[in-house]
Amino acid sequence: MNLFKKRPNEWVRTLFRILLMIFLGVTINYIVYVTGGTKGAWTQLNFIVIVLAAYYWKVRGGLIIALLLGVLMGPLMPLDVAEGIMQTPGNWTIRLSLYLGIAATTGYVFWKNDEINKKIDEEHLISHFTGLYNANKLFLDLNKMIEKDEKFCLVFFNVVNLVEISKYIEYKNIEEMIYKSTTVIKSKFGVQEMYSNNHNEYILVLKEYDEDEITQIISSTLHDVLQSIEIEDHLLKLIVKAGIVFSDDTSNATEIFNEARIASDQGEAYESGVYVYDSDFASERKLFYEISGSLNNAIKNDELYLVYQPIISLKDNVISSIEVLARWDRGDRKPVGPDVFIKIAEKTGSIQRVTKEIMEQFANQLLCWEKEGMKIKASINCTAVEIADDAFREWVKKLVEEKSIDKADMGIEITERVFSRNEKKLNDVLAGLQAEGYCVSIDDFGTGYNTLKYLGQIKADVIKIDKYFIDRIDEKHIKSLVRHIIDAVHEMGLSVVAEGVETKEQLMILKELDCDKIQGYYFSKPLLADDFTDYYKSFNINKYI
Ligand code: C2E
Ligand code: CA
Image (cartoon, rainbow, N blue to C red; front, side):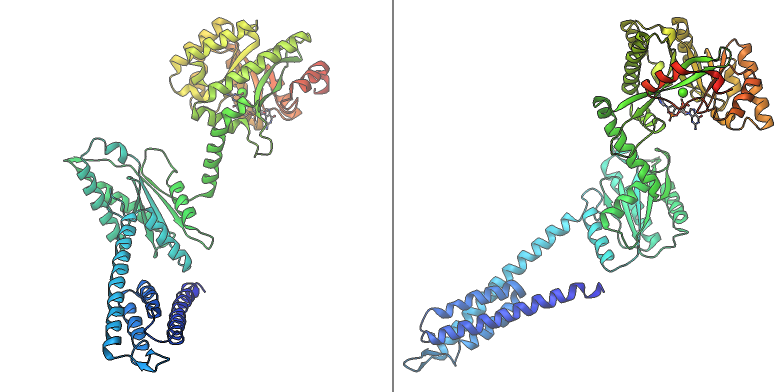
């Protein structure tokens, strides 16, 4: 179907031009005749037609039209119609020569102009740094293939550290290295061209490929190319990440190009690798950027709010404390849980702003509860980076003093998983916090790599056993493991919270194992402040046991 798309346009255009020439030629001829013959000035109207023909068909087309018009205005057209005087051969041959001269000159000028424009266009399609075709040419070629319904595979190479390396290596050496590498790749795949976008991005378009094998082939090609790179007598380690996309019926050039770029973002940041486009990865990335961009505004616009999950003491049968959990009211936008936005905030460095906002909101809530005669203890989740930061701890201290909050009421929860790195510094900080009077809880206990190794050393008041173990507590060996953890924690003088308790059976087993406190949906989901107030006031353990 697409085959016919272009041709009728060309034909229609050419036909229209020919008909226009005939119409103008006949009309001008008629005008010259009825105005009395070639003695008038009307013959010069033909200049327009000749210039137009030269514009359409350059020198050759111009000459043909000039010749035809010259003959039409030639021996058969009278010099003076009324008097019946014919032209002399001299009259019309001079005119014919004039016509041919105009056609040749203007045809040449138009041709030259076209050539210059073509050259300028070509230059726009070439990258001056790499000498390869650039993204403009890539889009032109991709669009042609898409129009023809051709299937293709786009491989996007991102030389991650090229910009960095090029600061230290002579420009001409980099150019040479690019030339050699792209030549090897081109010859390996039998293609004429590779394209480049920016200094460090190279694109290969393959029309013949095997979807199942292409990743492997690209990997081994990369391996070969990278092994042989030597610049200024040094073997350089280039990090290249390649992304692969296969075209489909819905492809458009920009989309497929971006998908290949996204594909190359997968994997570790500074490790070479080859990856096929994965739409889940793309959506995750999109969400990442959307969230990281809007999180600061969320704080400004009061979109972050808190919920509180009760923690029940099995020793005293009361609500002994609450865990403070963040929520984000995103209106009509896709909801995201704290597990997602907190991780993103950690990665983008806005976590401190988030935690400070949470702590401020919580401090105000605590004062409200105090006015209602409710003495609540709480724990707030913090990241290791935050609590290791002196300025952050100073900020918390100031907040607590300003609001006259009892430090024992504002505990800190920190995940066990962070203990595998720099535990000495972390333990010192935790010991400092304890000494100041804050209650320190270790979250997600049991999910780290060296759980037991750290158990003996962690400076904390509370250990929170992860939901993973509570979900499986009816299994004999897990129950036994939890028993040992509880006993060991007790021996160290700390207390144990079981997280994620959802059933009465789990609760009863934990009671049997002498667990101190319970947190989980069996008692309550995290609640808004007012709902928690009601829950707190009407709490009776007998409802649950
Ligand atoms: P976490 O610290 O382990 O918090 C406990 C999570 O388990 C909460 O999810 C809670 O709602 C959920 N949970 C409690 N009991 C049950 C149960 O019985 N069944 C089930 N299925 N889930 C239960 P949430 O609120 O979605 O928080 C998820 C994670 O996000 C938290 O895990 C914590 O790591 C992080 N997070 C939440 N709020 C904050 C915050 O304010 N600051 C920081 N740094 N992290 C937060
Ligand atoms: Ca927690």
